[in-house]
Amino acid sequence: MTNLEAYEALLRRHDWHYGRSDDPKVVRKGQSEASELHCARTKIDPQGDIWNSIAPADFHVAPLVSRAQVDPRDAEIATLKRHNKDLAGRADRLRRAIEGVVGHPDLGIEAHRQLRNALDLEQSIETLKARKAM
Image (tube, rainbow, N blue to C red; front, side, top):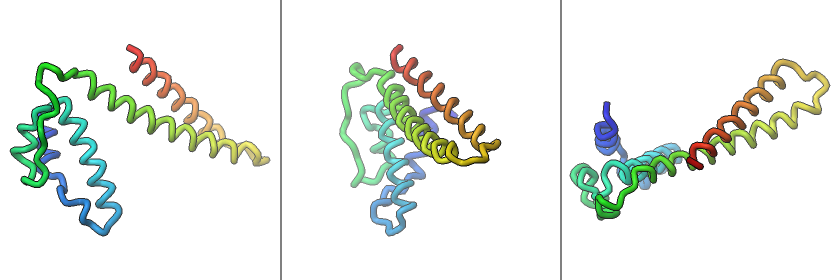
């Protein structure tokens, strides 16, 4: 499946009225999908032609910029920033978990696993920073 096909499929199955739901899970999922759609739109459909052909009339969008002005790296940079933020949050949670375990007299396999995960996350963050600097 190409990016264009995936974008169209996501537009077709998106719950456009997620904001009306009383279920917080539905709202979170809808917000996440909407964010993903808007990010993909900047790269795939900056004029909004595909979006407007699929979305209900209440959700039509105006063109972002002319096609000549779109930088294909913008979407990639936004994705890297999102991943970087997510990894930093995960690393912080692991650091707090490790600090809680370090005071325990029985530092076993679990502590070593958490330390290894924290180091892996730190390496991932450094890799993303290096990519961003390119």
